[in-house]
Amino acid sequence: MERKKVTVPGIMRAKDEGRPIVAVTAYDYPFARIADQAGIDFILVGDSLGMVVQGNDTTLPVTMDEVIYHSRMVARARERALIVADMPFGSYQVDERDAVANASRLIKEGAAEAVKLEGGEAVAETIRRIAAIDIPVMGHIGLTPQSVHRMGGHKVQGRKRGSAPGQRERLMADALAVEEAGAFAVVLEGIPLDLAAEITAALSIPTIGIGAGVECDGQILVMHDVLGLCESLAPKFAKKYANLWQDARGALETYADEVRLRTFPTIDHSFQSLQPVRTKRPMAAEG
Image 1 (cartoon, rainbow, N blue to C red):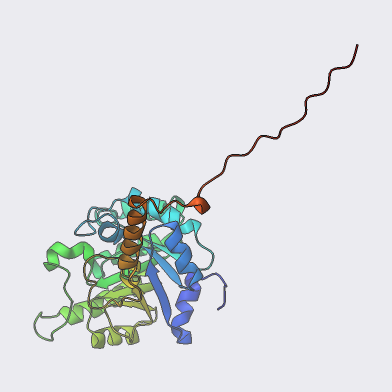
Image 2 (image 1 turned 135 degrees about the vertical axis):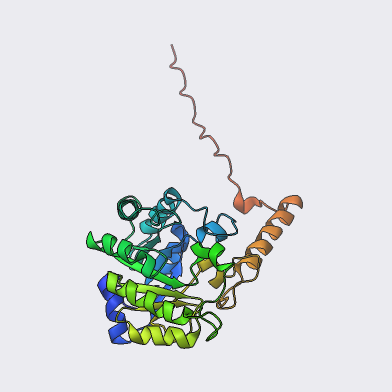
């Protein structure tokens, strides 16, 4: 696999070249290193850390300082992958000047290379302001986790024609608004595959799907879902490629058993005292 550094222009070219974009979330140095070595194109330091790392029910409690902290760890692991950091709830919705300042912090303090924010037409001007100071912006429409209370939960958006008047049209309008505002890519989350295909065809920027079907220009999943690191069931759109929760639990149970049975540590895991070197005392000279 080519180890050339992934850049924002490279992500954008992937759509024209018909090359699928591969992305995952990561929140610390070791998992970011693993993702980078596996050839992942971009790593998202997602506010999903609030749920899979902090144990919250939603992403809403995550703060700017927490995203910056995790982004710095991920950025230290970078060699090839592009690093994108989420703008957490409240960091861009209140005031456009605050949004620009917070995006700048993610680049300057968090060492991210791009930022992601949720919303369509409502945040288009915010995207425009951030992009205007040369901070690359990734959009995110559809099931936007920061809108969980308005949506009444994490629900698929635009699923049934006619069930939510204008919802499908609104999602298309959101996608076009995000592109027009200057985003270099847009995440489509929890959108029916036929609508996601229509949006992908309508945009000149790449679409990154998560629960949006195979016709998107790329795919992203949460690292913990991919590796089976969640105790509870993963969402329908995720695929578990390993079962590290069970593997880790089994390893720790074995470790605990061996300690209690005194079969660990063995001599191979222990250090020996160094024997002092004995020297002969010089004989006293005869008088």
